[in-house]
Length: 414
Ligand code: GAL
Image 1 (cartoon, protein in one colour):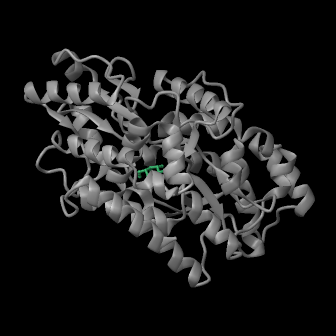
Image 2 (cartoon, rainbow, N blue to C red; image 1 turned 90 degrees about the vertical axis):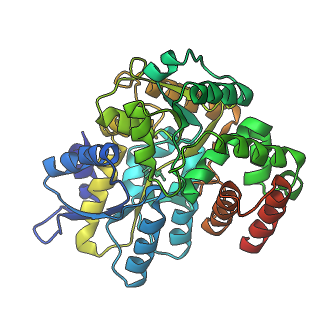
């Protein structure tokens, strides 16, 4: 199907010929087991169409290191065909005129009708498609080892207090309650959920999307920091600096009860051949059910030389095909970025994810992740990471000081 559509586009832009460069150069940070397995789905689809893959992997969850490499490549006038990218990072490249244009194929395949409007803010510039959304991840999930849950006699936590009680049960039973990777982006990603749980999704929006100062320094935000501090009591002594997928592995192996992480964690369970419902349980972060705090992986499509454009179009086309969106997201742990992909191939967590996106999108509780650059530009998101991590590691000592620092850091970054 993808190749037929691509051929149709070539009809408009000229037939692909021998001089076309068949190589697709892709920069990304998908280096864990689950991530690499998902990316393989795309590599294989494109290989079938005769394209070769030049991998530019830059390890580091959350993509901070990848974004530094990308910046250098673009500045050197040597952009990749495409790069994995998040939210406002894409808008910066678009504004700087660095992105290409795949609108011809977008119009032909009616992407505007099937991709949530909220995402189109990041994939288009003045109506022109210059990025394609690969998936919809969301950060407000918890991942639980089912055998450990049964061993400690735990039940689904419905509120933040329930969650703390559950973690307490694990601690009493001698199990590591919370598997955490103590890196700024991971702590900030967890704090997104804590804020939405503490204040509700409208509060989250007011604080992080509107940057309303009264919300940022409110008693509710202080409470959110106090709640974050409670979670620190349940991590193991070696949490600092740990990679996210190693924290997931602790839950997979039963060394820890739970990880708070976006649904890329489910990709790791899948790669370890663990099954939703029998080996592990997924719940929305307690107190956030009904809301989806999203981060979508996009492929930013750079302005490349004429001989590389056909390959770029083929990549965009393959990425947006219904069959790929299903196959890739089953492996990645995320849900499709198109709303017309059947949930048939997905496990129970994936089916819930798909249903949650649809209902949250309809009722206005589909909101971008602050930690993952979907609520604010990188400078503000970076300031947020900084304050959250300083608080979590004790450099900022009280929730009072934390909200003061948060307001200050955000105002400086704006
Ligand atoms: C996120 C990204 C996910 C996943 C995660 C950990 O930023 O959206 O796809 O890769 O980082 O690397």
